[in-house]
Image (cartoon, rainbow, N blue to C red; front, side):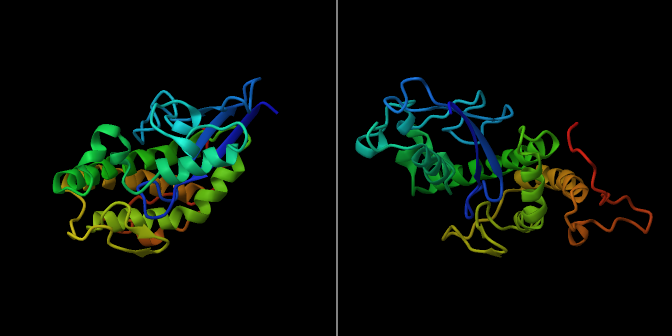
Length: 240
């Protein structure tokens, strides 16, 4: 086998929660003497300093960045593909991706750094939701049923997260169906974030309703009984 496609769940407590992130992997002829070549299916969106819009994955384990020593670098004797995927999920898709950028790490735990990190998380969550929509509308080959099943099971939780953020909760504070404050200062999401999130929530409601997610509690009742609502019909295909 020299080709692999993998999907990573966005971890709870991060701006990537409940999302799906796809990676295409090629194992070179020299593997495992050299690391695999990993490409992120970005859909043209850069959701992380280590995941470029062009699909480049910047990770010391893949020898795609100069940072890293010891077990952080590829070792033919004990490095594995599983280690690569776990590293992406735990080290790249983390709670404060703003500080993944080497130039930003020094500002961690400072008031300015935390403020910039929160703004980055807001932008990242919007891009993560767009990635969800793109995956639903044009899922990677052989993952069609998997994508629909995932969002059918997690759609309500995603919508609840959007509502919580619009009500003031910070991006990344959600764990399961509950909430936790990830900042001691108690700051809430910015007004500039809530406006585009409201529009995006409207789109998500329509996309999730089409695959059978119960969206009734999240829908705006509108001015009267004739108000438009998202259809709950399940189409045979979600491709555009």
